[in-house]
Length: 473
Ligand code: UDP
Image 1 (cartoon, rainbow, N blue to C red):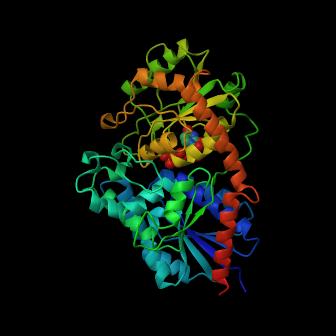
Image 2: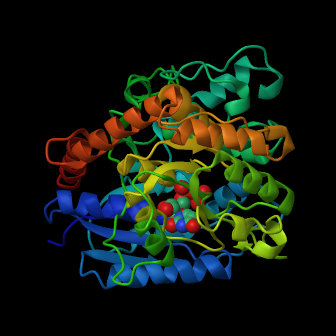
Image 3: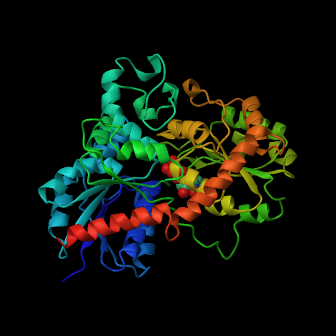
C-alpha cells in the first residue's frame, strides 16, 4: 500500500511557508519513512511572492525527500479587504473547493491535514473528508493563547482594548498591557479583528496545535493552552511545541560583504539592526536612528530598507543619500555598516562579533536570535510584534525594553535608541547582563530541545506517532 501522506496547507509568505515546510520535513524524518508529505500550493497573489515560492519549491524538489507539491488552481483575490489578515483569510477561503478536490484526488491515504493558522476555514474540509486536522502556529505560544482567549475577552471588554481599565488577562502570561496587543486586535470594528477571533475559536476544533516554540521558553503558557484555561468550555487542543523550527544552512562559500565586515570586528561588539521582510523607515525616523546609534558609541550593522515603491507592499532598497543625515556614513565608517537591502540575517546572528539585536520581533527573527544566544531590543512595527516585544522583555527576559510610540507610527527618538543600545551592549549594564545571561540560557535550551530526548524532539515524536496511528486505523 502507498505510504500515507500528511497534507500541508501553508500560506505563501516566506516566514510562514519556510517554517511550515521545515516542520513538515522534521515530521517526515521523525516518522522513519512511515509518512510522506504533500504540500498544497496556493498561487500567491503578487508576482514577488510567486517567484519566491517557486524558488523555494524548486530547491525542495531537488532535495530528493518524499515531498510532492500539488499546485491548486488560481483564484481571483478579493479586492475589498481592509487589511492583510482579512485578505489572507478570505483569499485562503476561496480555495475551499480546490483543497477538497485535491485531497479527495490523492492516490495515497491521507493521514492528516496540517493548516497554517490563517487557514482554519479548511477545518470544514477536514471534517467532510474525515481527515484529522492540525493547526500550525508560525508564531509563539503566547500568540496562540491570546487568539484562543480572544472571543471571551471580546465579551468581557466592551470598549476598544486601548480604552479599557487595567491589564489584559492571557492565561500563563504576566498581565498584558492593552498597548501590547497585536495590531489586528487594536480595532474591534475592523474585519481583521473579526478574523482573528474566528481563527482563535476554530483552533479548539483541531486535533492539535503544533507551535514553533520551545517548552523551556513558554512553559506556563503552553500549560495554560493544554489544560484548557485559554478557552474554558471548549475542547483543549493537544499542544505540540516542536521548535525552534529554523533552517540553518551552511554559510555561503563566498562570505557575504556583511560577514566579511563582521570578521574584523571584536567579539560581541556589534549591534545588529534588522526589521524583517516588511520593516522600513522614512527619512525622519532614519535620522533619529542614525543620531542614536552614533551617540551610543557602539559598533553597528544596520540593515535599512526604504518605503515601498508605488503599487507594491514590500520595502524598497534604501537610498542612503535620501534616508540618512549628511556625512553620517563617512563619520561612522570605522564603527558601522549600513546595508541597504536584505542581508543574510541568520549568518550575521551566528557571527561571534554580534552581541545584540535591535529587531522588529518577528517570531522567526526572535527564534534565530535565541538559537545563537543574542539578546534583543524589540522594536515592534506590525502584525503580532507588540505582543512579542512584551513577552520577550517581561516573560522570557531575553530582551531590554525600548520605548516605542505606537500612536506615532512606532516612532523611537534618538535618545531612546541610544539609551536602549547602551543598556543592551554596555558591559557594565545590569539590564544588558540579565538579558545576555537569559539569552545564553535559552540558546542552550533551544539546542537541547531539538536533540534526541529533548522537549521538542519528544513532542515531534508524539505527533508523528499519533498521525501514524490514525492512518493505520
Ligand atoms: N530576513 C533576512 N534578511 C533580512 C530581513 C529578514 O534574512 O534582511 C529573514 C529573517 O532571518 C527571518 C525572516 O526573514 O528568517 C523574517 O521573518 P520574521 O518572522 O522575523 O518576520 P516577518 O518578515 O515575517 O515580519
